[in-house]
Image (cartoon, rainbow, N blue to C red; front, top):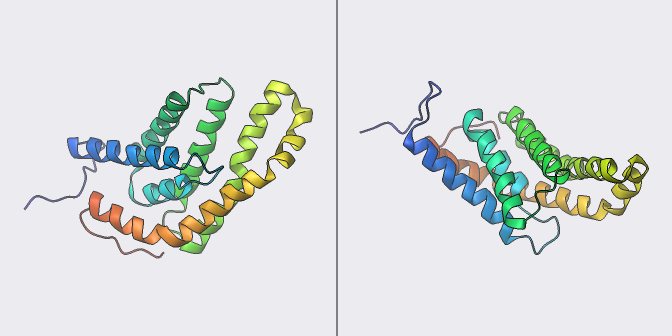
Length: 181
């Protein structure tokens, strides 16, 4: 029987590319399906799960692809907001990857904090456009959106991280990995 363990020498197989495409689709579709709810999404959770299982050469292109698809679909390739979005999601991806072997409570805390940090990236973009005097008023006016993003990230990671990680381990590695979560 053929081993389901992915290539480790930096070469991507057709299987790896197919899995990456499927995971990008999941990431993109879940966010678009929840756009009717302001800042309520599972993107923080999904990226945390991907970061716990996937190697960086698969993980980071999925997140970059998500930002590109999101901006294409929403028609918002703004020269200020697109880099802010990319920087925010890549920052979360790097943090989630760094925490991949950490206990669940640490991932939960980071997911909650990221809800606020995410808004800071956009506040910086707005500040470049309208001047830095707008930074704090923008942050204060959007605090409820940041709270919703933090709460959705925190709650979704608490409830769904372990089962989704187990499913992705089965898909990608062929066996669930024992973790310290």
